[in-house]
Amino acid sequence: MASLPSTTTRLIAADGYELGALEFSPSGSAVGAVVIAGATGVRQRYYARFAAYLADHGFAVLTFDYRGIGESRPPTLDGFGGRMRDWGQLDLDAALAFAATRWPQVPRLAVGHSVGGQLLGMASHAQHLHRVVTISSQSGYWRHWPHVTKLGMAAVWFGVFPVVTGLFGRFPGWLGVGEDLPPQVAKEWARWGRRPRFFLDDGVPVDGFERVTAPMLALSVSDDLYAPKPAVDWLHALYRRAQVTRRHLTPAELGLTSLGHFGPFREAGKPAVWPLLADFLRGA
Image (cartoon, rainbow, N blue to C red; front, side, top):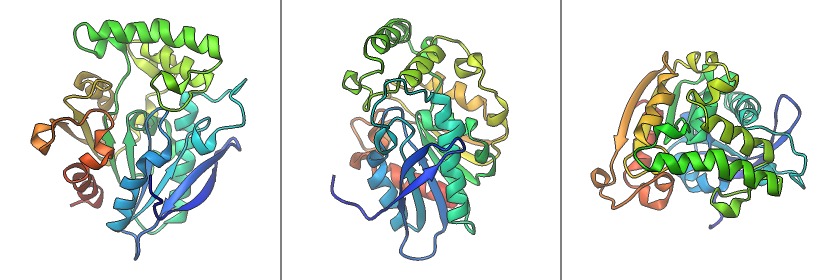
């Protein structure tokens, strides 16, 4: 990927853990400050082109890596105790707090991709957001998947993740999840996926989701194998006090042959998806 205009910074979570982050600044005064919360196992650099696009359209943008991932990974994951809920309660919360301090005079905004949209309900500073976009953010409970594919998801959560994580002491990225997942992240994610109420059945309180009151654009994608529509609907029902606008996109309506789980942040999604997100964040 070509170098994009950004400034490296570090975030300090409430427990003292240090996170790698990037700032993307507009050429003039910012119209809003956007925190991008990425998907599981996806490094912040994946969102750099989208972040640069938003900066070109007047937004200040912050991207970051969750603990154990990318620029926030320790020298070894052996014995690393970070959990997936820590990504929301500590890491995303630190990013939201940093953005509020760094750009105090502009609206606070967030884009959550996949798990990023789940973690917003676990970050206490999310209650102060002015507008939110989620893309393919869902429950991972295996029964939300259609037909025979639910059996594949059950095999992933009940078998593949526990066994592989036990063997390697982490879930290796080369098995299709991007970056290596820290052991407790992988175990917790699989545990949630086995339970009907997902993270709620594992002690994550619903209160944080109910404290989010910002207008929210919640997108799902028809050819997304990782976030079927019922799973996306389930998650956003938790944001019951937010002003949720749900849209289920199809590639055809966007003039594309495919889009999937990651397409909205690739160049193919730029002409149709990126302006939609920017307009909503701006309040247009």
